[in-house]
Image 1 (spheres, rainbow, N blue to C red):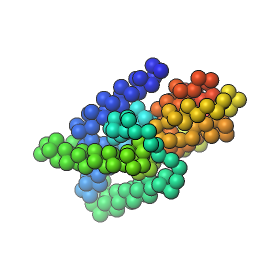
Image 2 (cartoon, one colour):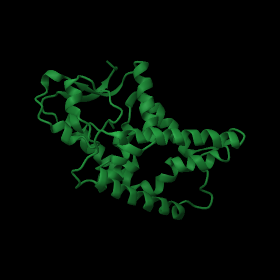
Image 3 (cartoon, rainbow, N blue to C red):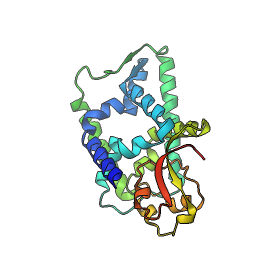
Length: 240
């Protein structure tokens, strides 16, 4: 419970800081910088997130992401959750388009011309970012009540793919990392883990299959916290 309370505190703080931090972790600003051959702060942040994901998977999504925190605040009273379906593939399509655009823009700019963490901030960032922030807020509200809480994380966020790739590489290299650990023999099929998962994963099925590897897990630990029998736990280990 202590870890869960810490997680909630961290992600809520991150959500309230979103108007100030969004410019420094924006997929759109990366495209703007790439058109001039510049590596900006967002690119550096995403590189760091990728490196961390080798060991912790999508922990950024579950503990620190401002957009994720905003969705949790908006959807705190919403019982609807995302589910499996064709929408799961959208984030991969969006990532492929985004990554291709970055490559094309850098080529058109003649390659990498420099690194500028403060790119685009020379004239001040708050007024221009507020428009983006309000648009994102509206999208989060609509998606939450139509598709469920944290639906943007599960279906549409291209940044999640960076961490999914990182986790896959970490598993291939058998790196120690933060993972869910399952013990099927302890499961009583109460369904509490499913109710606790903010992204709508069928955790009980994962436990029964003794397979905790899923691309949609945001490493929040809510399922482990809800399980009174210890059928699913949360900690560091090597991939099975």
